[in-house]
Image: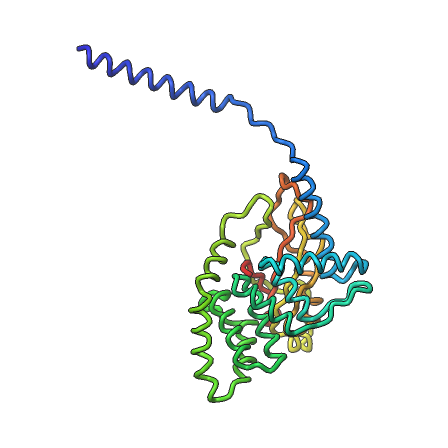
Length: 311
């Protein structure tokens, strides 16, 4: 009889301990928020200033001193291997920028250098930029490799229409009969060489977002344009890709917006700007940053737009 009694007492005692722990966990006051250290505060201030300087450069609205500071911070980040800075700087060299008295001349070689490094580090939007650059330079094989790589990584299966298909149509039209077979070998060689790094970067980008990271709040990705286009505009802008740099506030509304690149014509960016400005993302009232920066790719396809969430 003693063993059953002891066993029952142990169960009662254990239940009491668990209940006490549960009550204590509920009643425990939240840990007080710790104030940032001076180093952390200085780092946040520097980050805000760097973002402002870079936006001034990209938008072309700022003094020469501010825009030069934005350029230097981008260059330092790109040389350290930051793929976002490489994509940004490569896109700036792709078209050039004028910001006050600071002139960043178009430089195809530097654009190619930075965009290629960004692409193999998983920044997929650098791939169509590289393809457009090689189309401009008349490099048929290279243009097709980048266009096919973009289709392979960024475009969902069975949806290879719109701008990616239009880009590939233009690049394939540059090939000779002898190059048609070579392009398959070259593209497969590219994928085999860089696939591991690209997939690892894409996996990292797909991780759960932090509290401050903007997240899309609308489920649709393809809806009619907000403004009607004439037949001339539809023909001229049938397919395009525009990449904006956007600053969202804590409520998820667009506060600042600048065009990073627009292909194949720059005027496409002006037509799609209103759509980008009305974009909404998740609110982040607890975020310590007043502005949250993100890329916003908008694709035009037969007077409809598609917003991509990869890139």
